[in-house]
Length: 263
Length: 212
Image 1: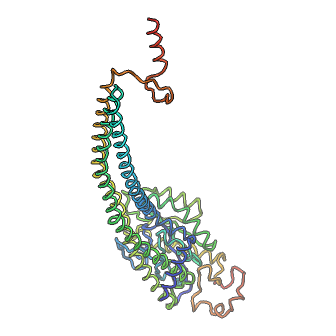
Image 2 (image 1 turned 60 degrees about the vertical axis):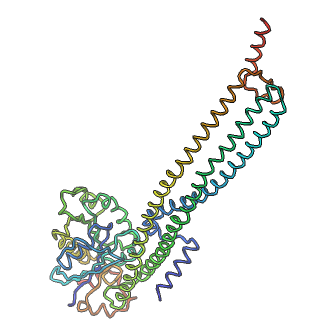
């Protein structure tokens, strides 16, 4: 039962963040660095999941807006019988279409979302349990070291009773150390595996998103170019208020005009 | 068996340099190629004879792993001799000697005899630290130096016994106050009954007191 005293003491000290033996901390450096990696995977996966959710929601809204804008242009185009009306009709149609196509991006995103969720609930959760078990064994191991340190203060190998007691503590340290070493190895291996599995998951799930994105972007770019090309011969609108919308630089325009005037 | 003196030794050095194997070779005259990790400290004892006097060496074989450092520090107290061991096939164990030496000097009495040992001298083909380097380090820090092999037993006896001789000489010279157990020397039961009956407070500060 005496070891329980040391375990409790160690637990309280660790909870309070009391400064620990620098040598013991240093000997766990590799493990602590790996735990840092684990925490970063844990945090970044949660962040990523939230971001994917927000992203797909925004894509949805953007698609809706795009579609409405397209419908609005089409309606206006129908009423306007001039060249402008024709343009609005064309652009509106392309925009609505692009809005509908944009929704295709959600599918691979939702899949990625599910993959990340599964990853978090299975792989990360499982590793986290191992980390918890390791931390428990680490507390017990460090507690047994403190106990040993305490009993070492007055140790005389020629005094049978003291040596007996020391042997008891030594066996205890041996046991807790063996258990801690086992969990430590488990943790190191599991976290390495987790990091590799995460890369694997991304390379699979992101490829479909990447392809869909490429497809969508190419198709809508092409559609807009075609629409744009069909308006080449139309007269340009001169922007007086929203000047930044005019594509052609004003000086070019003005020189052209002047040339024309000269002629 | 009663002894004239008891010397407390500690063996220190990085993990895996062969501290426990040196002890095993010295006390049991055998070699174990695979040794369990030392947890805290292990003990060994052997009688030797110097100047026709029986001397008991009580040897504390400390754990080399970093996690035990704070624990092993409490074993330095009251040691008369220390064997500071490095592995001639691993340069880093030699590089850590300064830290070990500082540790030893800080936590023990100033008269402690320190023997520097370059172990695993049988592995000549894998040697990374030259014998001259060990020699130079020892000279620079005032230590005795030897290369040993716990496997072939080369120089193992000598390392332990030479340290004992050095301590014995220091006693003769009066450097050690042998009545003060903090020096790591105990007088055997049959040796000086008069001293044993003295109350602890009345220890003489004269260095030669109680000495043969």
